[in-house]
Amino acid sequence: MKQIVRSICLALLLLVIPMSAYAAPQKVSYTGGDGSSFEKAVVIHGANELTGVDAEYDYLAQHYPGYHRGKQSLSFHGKRHFDVLEFTTAGGKKRTIHFDITEFFGKF
Image (cartoon, rainbow, N blue to C red):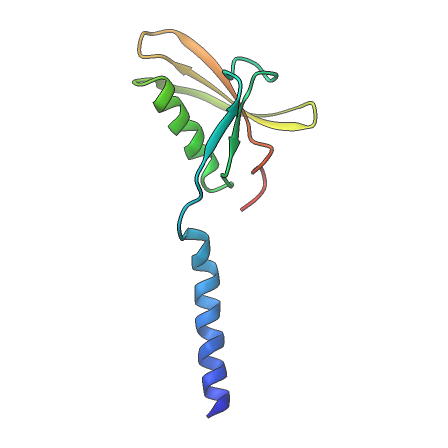
């Protein structure tokens, strides 16, 4: 009987641990500059590989409502990792924004 209880507990534990990654999303926050250069990049905090790119596009939606996506590239500059996004504002102006993703790059 003890063996059955242990097996059930182990099975439940193996089910719960992977699901914890999807529970209660972390609060994402932004610091840094306006994103106009590597030195003035928008720094993303509280994200991971699964939520980081969404956080970038959420930032764009908040700061540039009605924008249109362009190219996205990964860049390495001064020992830090960046996503560089090109987009067009609702008014038709082409812009580039730099996101410092060092905190979550490669972390699931």
